[in-house]
Image (cartoon, rainbow, N blue to C red; front, side):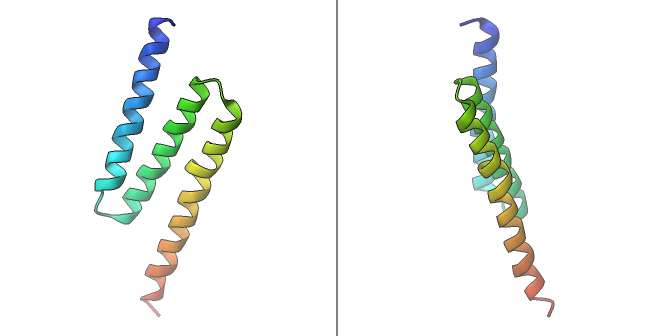
Length: 84
């Protein structure tokens, strides 16, 4: 493995760990959801590096797009219910 690939692996793993820690320790729910989406993007990149493009596409669709969208809609509905 070339040194460029090792650097890329380390950056993706570091980004994955940092974004997961930010998601867990964030006090605001929207910030946690955004950090969770970033974690999904890094996970998809890790799967792509491991030569699993089908899993990477699934992770990008679900972990980086669909789940955060559902969380954001739920947060909007919960906070919108207080105004009525």
